[in-house]
Length: 141
Figure 1 (spheres, rainbow, N blue to C red):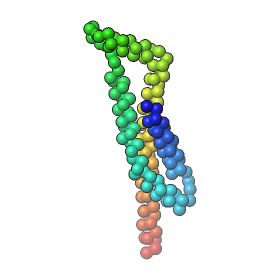
Figure 2: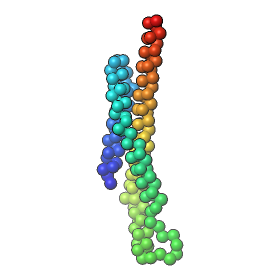
Figure 3: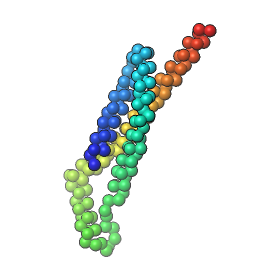
Figure 4: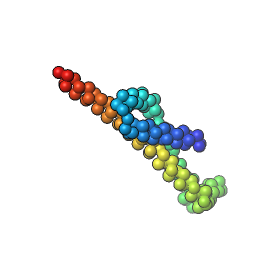
């Protein structure tokens, strides 16, 4: 279970580094090459959006479908599971699990938001580059 969160954490860190590289001032040639390289990387990196979405659904599903005994008639197994889940929620471990799930939600949302930001930055840089080329052609005429 921890592997998926480690992968998501590394992807968020990589996306943050790419966003930082794209927003730092740099020479035009270097910026254009960096934008074209990152644009090529963005297509295969799109998997992060459905991956993060699936993780959000997993968190939601686990939160909504915790074992509970709401009726007056419960089997012994349901009662034992319910008591264990109540003890888990009340205990320190339960509090840690709650904060861990909040952290994971923030991680998923950040992954999607950073991907979108990088994609938009690359798009804007390409548009600026094409507008500069058009301006240069008009000046040459």
